[in-house]
Length: 530
Image (tube, rainbow, N blue to C red; front, side, top):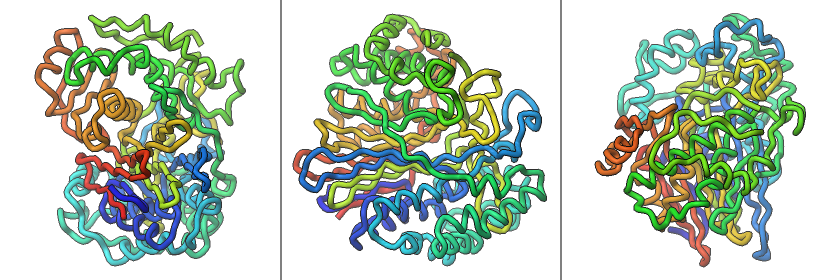
């Protein structure tokens, strides 16, 4: 708990970097950018400046009234040079150049900072640059994931050079340095986003792509801009729950909540199979619609000709109608989307989420990602930047809203969340984990709001994850009676470790203005305030 400012991230070094900015008089976005830059150094398989980012930002009213909520979409687009005929097979291989879209994170960092920042942009990157130069001790969670990626990193000469030591992942506790990444970060600190999109960084990435079979061109980088968007939301138990609009999957959170609002979850046993069964079935219905309708609104005709019908999907009457498909005594096997087009989904689960609230009540709900571990397992030449594989999120089904086209944004899994009560910011939160994220959001929210668990307890509680069909993963530690009850209902249950269930960070604000921070024990992180 704290009063003046708080940061929650998945790594202590990033939490401290963000908190230092707040203590120096910075805003929530100053803290968020500093923390995100640090995470790009100390969790290089999870995030980086070669990935995308999304932001929900709450701009507090200095007079104590209703603040302003804004969204920023920092996802990049596919290369104009990558034609559909270049892609072989039924899907885009995540470990390939066709999967590499233009990284959008750096532009989002500076775009948001220009609007909300108080400190110098260069100063925000200082801690990350220093850490990349001096090195950092590799922690247990990071080391285990790094080791699992060794074979993939060996396929790319630049990735091998910059992220393996004598062909192997660094050992636990080893001090890892990244001089090339430090150099790239220093160029961005000096020249801003232009260094990345119009200067030496873009030129080197394009040079390496050309030499190794890639498609990115300088024009792709020069055309990139982040997009300010209006957040979308729904009322749940009297609170306003907000997400970013498509091309992300935040819509899935709102669809699930609209379904669940028709049931008295609070009267159910949180540890009972009936409760978990209901949430799993709501997830199936929500994801059927999510994967049927979500694509890039900028690249599709608007409603009536293949766009995303948000108003219809979020209508409470539609949710009540869909609820009739939930059988309390039997799981559904692949429900169809509601009567509104159909299609593909996405892969990957390597992301960092962070929450920051400053002393004025401004808040950043911020997510930055490479999609898969180390992205496409391709580094951008001498830049030391790992490139993400967001293009693997495209569908190759003809006519689908998310169908691949040059210059288009793919379906995105990374989603920041916020909750307001009567116009007052109450919660800035997120749950990492690729396609799992809407499921994780809803479990955190229902644990907290329907069952009264504290934020930390809501995060700590064992999770479930529906994958496909009748298959459900239950986290080890979930009550045996719940697992056995799900099996008896007809679910095909497997037990799994915490790595399958993402990682959450959250900051709540109570009616006294006290900040409550929570950080997921499934990660190495921490929530700190002052």
